[in-house]
Length: 256
Image (spheres, helix red, strand yellow):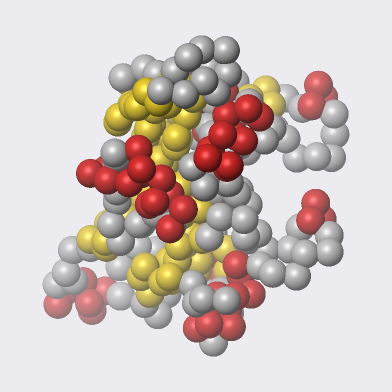
């Protein structure tokens, strides 16, 4: 298998591109699995790594690991305290709104209790339509099929938040077997060679847990999404692998 794409690494943390379909670590909900991002990364760089946040198995994109438990704890706290800026790109069904804040409470989905017993918690996602396309094919009941490219910025961190919010608003993400519509999922899988959830984490910004400098990371899409964007005429919206971080001053170096 090809090596993981490392976006950034220093002595405190490492940031990688997580492939779609790969679990981050072992889970009671995925017994029998033997391939995990955590193990792959550990073997690739020869160091123990500590997960900081989560991405769903079918979601691809930028993911941070600490190289010590202390650094990972600091970064996890930053995620919990909403000090991390996150952006995702999603391909959705329909002509999504130009810009909107989705503020729908969500029940946690942890698989241990019936959903009716889980408390509903506030969840907020800002969405923005970046582009759209109308294809001259009948996929469902209409003679044309409309799809949108959406940027999503979750302001809270509920499980499956972006997927559930967009579905509830009427614009489910293509490839979402649970919250989407199978006829559109099949069309993209069979006719457009995109047989996966079309959701990618493309940007993270956070304060470095040691230097305190603001780190900004953008992540290019995988081959499947890049090819799809090319087919739909969205090449101009493809993100690039990029890291932006201010240079440390001598005083800051001494402080670290």
